[in-house]
Length: 310
Image (cartoon, rainbow, N blue to C red):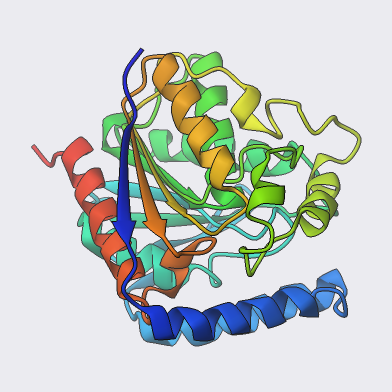
């Protein structure tokens, strides 16, 4: 068993935080009036706007029917590869909604980023996203990218998917990635942690009702505590080094702590970075929040440490 390195950082953007909390709360209320098609549309519009805030090389690719984007530099020149799985509660999001974030992380890590456009629920419930992620990872290996040069990263649902993918790789004796970097990972889709009660009034984005609705769409006919759906209940033996970012004001707070604890008990090197006053996936707003920009820098440093060029 290894001890969890749990660092707590104070937020400084009090006025900006108040503004974004208001905007995020309005967005959460808007979900009650939008159907899923409309919610996806507005997320894509927001992503298109955010993509203007972080410019860089974008190469769209197709892999045996799967689509994705290669960012920052061509795959052929990649000395480090950041395989990024986007968030969106498994029902929305795409490489475009997270392009600005993946580009910034790739720059901080001095890496090439690959963002997969995995299939979404409810049209394609679990295990579609996991199967797509596995196929994409196999494709990277077939492109002669050594696993020790691959870092897995993801936010929210994408963070949970990165954990489930790593568990699948280890279980099926594939070479594992060098490290994982997760932002507010959603790893327990039973939505049963105490933080839904103790922090529900403080989280401007997510409540238990909304989370359970999305969880059931993703699970389809499977149980929510199935480890492929809720990887918190899976195995963590032989897991690579893990860096987790979490905000103190989010209902996924307990999941991040439980994930760190379970992984460390299995012998994994775990670093948990908590930002006081911050909300779910605050790193997404790095163009406006210095805390988000700092999280990107720390994530890049972590990837460079575990994926040395020589």
